[in-house]
Length: 496
Image (cartoon, rainbow, N blue to C red):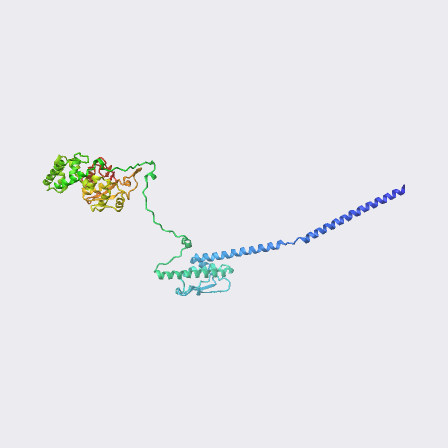
């Protein structure tokens, strides 16, 4: 029994020792393995040294920044001095007391000016008198300064540090050269243009010419406002235009046989056929055959004898009016008869037989070729194009027969669209005409009672019903379609 216990104790000690040795060996192996892994990782990783490169780049950029700032500051000061040179007082204050500059006259080039600079020396005492200025003929006009102003300038410059002496001398030379160029340029321009000198004002560089030159354009002609579209508070108006029929309907047109008989009987008795027909129409005859052959013969003989009795009258129309007055003794009848005679003579006998619309082309040609009728170019074009109504053409020819001369100032071309807000003018449809002169007398200034305007309005109102206008506008109102308007002081407006 004691031997077994001794063996078990030895085995246990050996086991413990073996376990300790194994654990120690494992620890040593783990340590060596970790060291090997660390050395391998370090060998594989590249060694990058960032600090020196960053410092070098920063220093390079800082050097470039400060060098650029110093260069831009020096260039800016030089350009500013060249553009806006300092005054005489400032140039004297910044001058170097140890530098002497001699300037030739205007004929010497600016580049040949000499400057002698001395080495930095001790500043002279303030009590030392200033050097005498150079002669007037050798000194530039821009450098002429009294000696009293140079003395304090020299004393102030003497107190400046010696390190700034060189820079001050360079700046002084630049200013003097710029002034010499300016003086030479002004003297040259003064010799060319007389006593006129160009003055370089401070801030003149701001008045540079524009990059885009302004182009001058003609103003468009002003256009009259359209009442329908522009007038406030004006509602839209529907203006219906209907073509007017022929003034002579077929029932009132003369028969061709009667027309031939009328001309033959009137010529046999030496009477105007228009006067004979006018007497018949004024008497109330409205048919296509207003009188029998016997009545035509009697009327023609009576008018012929009456005209023979009044041959001493002033003119033929007055004699005709007196002869017609002797038939019935009424002036109204005589006035209407003379008006009808003028109308029939103006349009012609064929128009009374075939209708006014049929006679429109021939009547237009007669009006355009009539020397008694003056029409503006636009109105002549309207008549040639056939845009003017036959009533207006007959009216123009009628006034030419009544007054011997007529001037038409407006038909269609040249007139505005609206006569008043919401109402389209009759001119637009070719149903109106403006008369500015009659018998060589202007309407302007002749619209008083008894004037040519009153006579013309009365003649227009004597037209037959089928030819009666709806508007006769002037400064006179004679009743019916005649009424005054203040803006018609230079013409008579006749609209149908």
